[in-house]
Amino acid sequence: MTETECRRVSGGQVARSSKKANRAAASAFLFLVIIGLVLLAVVAIRHDNWHTATKYIAWAFIPLLVLLGFTLRVRCRVKTTRSTACGNEAYGLLFGCSRAAGHRWGKLRRRLGFHVEPTYIGQSKDNNVVMYQPRPQPQTVKLTIEDSLLTKCGSWATLASAVIAVAGILLQAHLL
Image 1 (cartoon, rainbow, N blue to C red):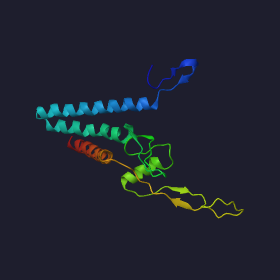
Image 2: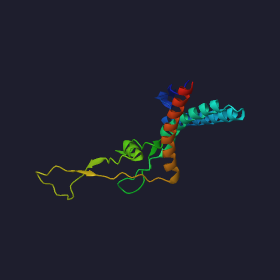
Image 3: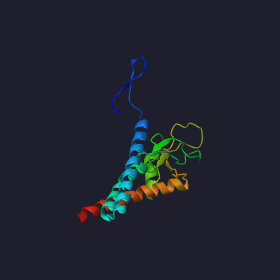
Image 4: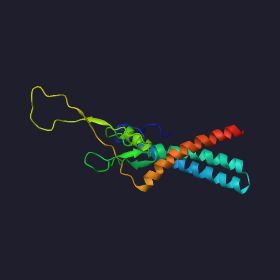
């Protein structure tokens, strides 16, 4: 039985494999691929084959990008309306959680430096019900991310690994 197949649980019901388990397995696999490519690069350097070593290093940045950007399980950490960090799980350092409105793409825009803020329809300030109320105006909510130094460095490492991987592969294609 493969990971994508269904498995039987008690009561005869059929359940799909957990998304968390699949992402954890993908993260572990990508980490092993990175380690393997770096070890191959070290062996190539020890044999004075710098050209092959740079190929292996360039290819190692691709799984690093996927690991840090999309599959690593982290906390969302987007500041909520209660002024606390969102505790929902997110996958990758670039995106927020998918449970709260505006977190997934808002965090990515904020990481990339686009300060586009999500808008939410606000309620009126008073509790009086009037027959003809004016249409509520959208209120701008500032999206901030409560990050530690480690997650900030990880986000920039993800973006840098994307650029380095593309540049390295293009350079290797040009040198062939």
